[in-house]
Amino acid sequence: MTTGTEAAFWMDTHTRLTLVEVAETCGISESVVQELVEYGVLTPAGAEPREWVFGAECVMSVRKAARLCNDLELETSAMALVVSFLDRIQELEAQVRRLRSQAGGV
Amino acid sequence: MKYKDYYAILGVKRDASADDIRKSYRKLAQKYHPDVSKDPQGEEKFKEVAEAYQTLKDPEKRKAYDELGTAHASGQEFRPPPGWEQRFGDAPGEGQFSFDDNIDLSDLFESLSRGRRGSARQSRPVRGEDFEVAVRLTLEQAFHGTQVDLQVALPEYDDKGVLRAVPKTIKARIPKGATDGQRLRLRGQGGKGFNGGAAGDLYLDISLAPHPIFRVSGHDLYLDLALAPWEAALGASVEIPTLAGAVNLKVPPGTAAGAKLRLGGRGLPRPEGTPGDLYAVAQIVNPTVLNERERELYRELAQASRFDPRGQLAKGSA
Image (cartoon, rainbow over all chains, first blue to last red; front, side, top):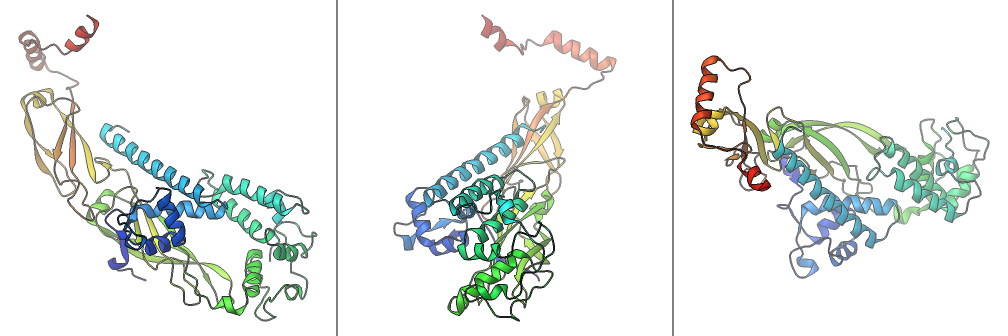
């Protein structure tokens, strides 16, 4: 089976997703996405939920958190916490990579 | 079919309460969950624990499991007693339910709950599962874009309704613009949906193999540029490699060690927008062996120069 390029897209800020798409991609309900926005871990552009636009870079940590919370039977508030920690880890890892590249010899 | 001791897997007694089973599951799940565990066997252990919990947390399934008896040791071949499946809810009748030697105990309980859900729920479309696969690229592949063959084993239901891992090869085109830590989504290349549900997606988790010359930071590249002391002092035009071929770089006079010389747009391409930059980090390298003439010139320079490289230290101690 060959996959055309049209089926592939980068999960970064340039890929925009709606509320429905984020819910579908992360395997959670729209109301859970709305809760994550209320907790401040997702920050879409747009005022109303139906106008919300998310950068696709948020998807990976939300998916991971959703999986964890589903398997460990945790609540959405815990999921919000996990998402914020995962984002922080990702940020720090990127920083380590950056510093290593600049310093060299590692 | 091989027997599995679900109680032993969860580390509870056969008469454990539902509450104890849940507590024990949560503890083990936290320990082995593949998203948090560093244990290389974590995923395998988590699957076992989750499988045991899926059966034991459901009172009906637990009862069914208990009726299989206690006579079997874990891993021992066994067959459920005749008519066993008929006793539970709307389990499918004979013929639909085969005790194939290849089927797994978890498939058995999975079929049991699918049977129990009844026909109304069965026609509901279910979306296929998403999968993530790690893809390691060379810097050159990321720069030019590439095609990779991904070996994956995706679970599918066979015609008997039994879930099996089906190995397959997916050819994926990685457009240029990849860098370390980026994800690419291949829509519809994950697990198959059932009852007309859409297929899941396949996520490629991209990492870059270390390169002998370039270090990667986002879409920027760094390389160490060795300079002779006189090149750094006087300036020079030096040839340096880039991923698109060698270019000439003008080193300005008075370049200090550690200075970053930027070559705009010579880094990795971005999926959108301008490409990253290439930075040459100046390193001043002394010849290890000096001939008499070189030594003489250095001596002359030492005499003539009023440069004090430790001026800062003197100021600090004063």
